[in-house]
Amino acid sequence: MTRADVIIIGSGMGGSTLAATLAPSGRRILVVERGERLVPSPQDRDPKAIFGDGFFRPDETWLDGDDKSFNPGNYYCVGGNSKFYGAALIRYRREDFQPRPHMSGSSPGWPISYDELEIDYCAAEHLYEVRGTDSEDPTEPPHSVKYPHLPVADEPDVADLRKRLNQVGLTPSSVPLGVDIDRWLAAGQTTWDAFPNTCGGKMDAENSALAKALQYENVELLTGAQARKLIAAEDGSLMGVEVEGHGMLQAPLIVLSAGAVQSAALLLKSANETCPKGLANRSDQVGRNFMNHNCSAVLALHPLRRNRSIYQKTLMFNDYYNSDGNGGPPLGNIQMLGKITGPILASQTKLPGWIAKLIAERSFDFYAMSEDLPNPESRVTVEGGKIRLDWKRSNWEAHKELVARLKSHVRRAGFPVVLSRPFDRRTPSHQCGTARMGKNPTNSVVDIFCRSHDHRNLFVVDASVLPTSAAVNPALTIAALALRTGRHIIETEFAA
Image (cartoon, rainbow, N blue to C red):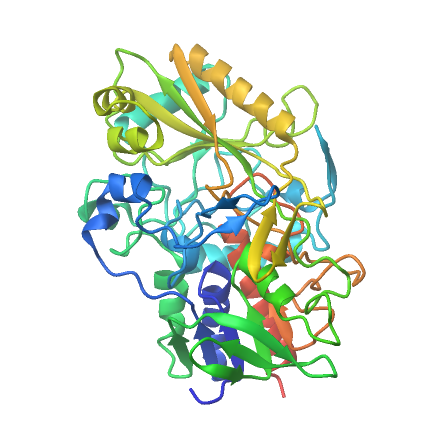
């Protein structure tokens, strides 16, 4: 494509969903992706390769807040991180869009309401063929359209767990999932989280959204093409994108969808004489308010009870999502992890293989998740061309309380041994913030349609625009925002 009408940088949840939305317009759309398509390989189902050797992790290091190098767990490929995600496609709750106090601070709310995004949540659930129900979870916000498919059924041991949790006073519900479970398991009897999708079993950004976009002749995908710099004219309008190996690519509209860290870094790297702090950064908010969910893995065990499940990620509960159960502040969400196996556990610990196998065969594996609050000092910067991520973890006391509540409940449910381990910066847990959405250009980066306040022909459509992290997986919300932004572009930019 010699000249495009829209260049989208990144093919993850935001970029691919936006491409699918814009494709029917007939405008020339170029999706620029630094990685390549994943192809089937022996490592796809090899837990040692994935969890022990980091086969799919990037050959890249960032600096932390103490200037120590670490290898981030972000993936660069067509479809982005969604190729490895758990496909839990959960709506933010209505309360997440409103300001509310937390144990260690407060979340500011959103410049739009849940009701303004609800129609796009419905469209995203259909685009990603979500399996779910809105009748089990009391915190589930209103749906104007039902889920396109019924929820994925519990395997027998998870069904028994659901019954036990209900008996100790909890309200377990089905996780909304973008998964064709039969297709996934047909490719190999493996668990879910962090395993790459090369068989089509996950409804990820590549095979759900980008595949639909590429059915149109006016959409093109350019792989192995890393965006290095955005080029802006003196009047503030963006002229194009400098792409490694391809020079400057030009388009009247530029969309940045590289993820919360890389989108912020690219804006900062694109500083010029007119914008010395970086593009879209007159507010000095680019890179700030980085959030990463507070998460822990919690393993519940009984020495005489085995968990024979292959795919256990069908259950969650939100009893402590909107309060601590006693009228106090919210604590977060609990959902199942993909099943921990012996090789996975051995690769993440120093346990001998036989002990890891013994534990894994008896464990029910939970994922406890609490909201990380926006903080302008929690930020992404670029120093000497290298990314520095100084994450200021917040609301940790609430997360510790959530984990303590979970442990108490599962013990009462019949599991005398409960182990927990928090995730660190090497395990990205839904990175967001860094280019926050808002109505006021002095304290936000993009407006309520994800358009840059500073550059009218620049949009940012990924997790970086989220004003708050909430306490559920953000993928569906990113897709819903991309659909909303796409409609806005069609109505305002393509109408003439």
